[in-house]
Image 1: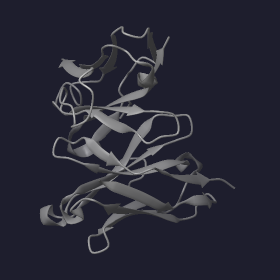
Image 2: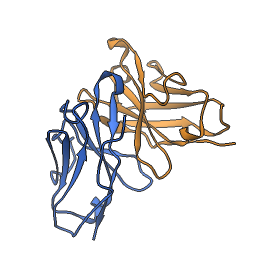
Image 3: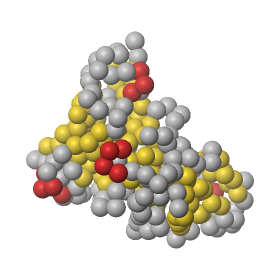
Amino acid sequence: QSALTQPASVSGSPGQSITISCTGTSSDVGGYNLVSWYQQHPDKAPKLIIYEVNKRPSGVSDRFSGSKSGNTASLTISGLQAEDEADYYCCSYAGSFTFYVFGSGTKVTVL
Amino acid sequence: EVQLVESGGGLVKPGGSLRLSCTASGITFSNVWLSWVRQAPGKGLEWVGRIISKARGGTADYAAPVKGRFTISRDDSENTLYLQMNSLKTEDTAVYYCTTFNQFNAFEFWGQGRMVTVSS
């Protein structure tokens, strides 16, 4: 099972909005509404920021939002802040043989 | 506050074995489903395997690259998750994270990670 495809890097200025795409197939992203997103700062453990495509865990800023269309999921960060500079990974459930597949990761840079 | 603390790991030669442990607090351990996720140096995240609660059967599932070599188990009396790694390969070199995962198949809480290096 190949990793889901994400852009290697995305950048934006403080206050701007950016969107990270996550492209899979009908066997993973397109087949289930079970896409999650993780934020990882350098040398830290990942943190869940979106689950079930567009839901935020308690305590996660509402500047983070998720969506999905067909085989592509997206994470939007609005009102970009310096603290948002991190790596972001998507993940999708992929059925009872492969189970879970992560995206290739996107490095977000705040200019 | 949920805390997951991994231990074990270190340096091992190819073909060797190693066991990681993950002790949890702040949760009803017997109810949670648990998973291992790894990250090779400078690379992305990779799912390793999961184990469901004993109430739901306690079965474990594995990613293809580790199936037959790794075994996940749990001791609910000790609030501890284990990852037994056998026949280790250089490509198993990574930081290994234990995580809980919820009914939406999202990895909710993460440990701090433990480095495993497979090298001769």
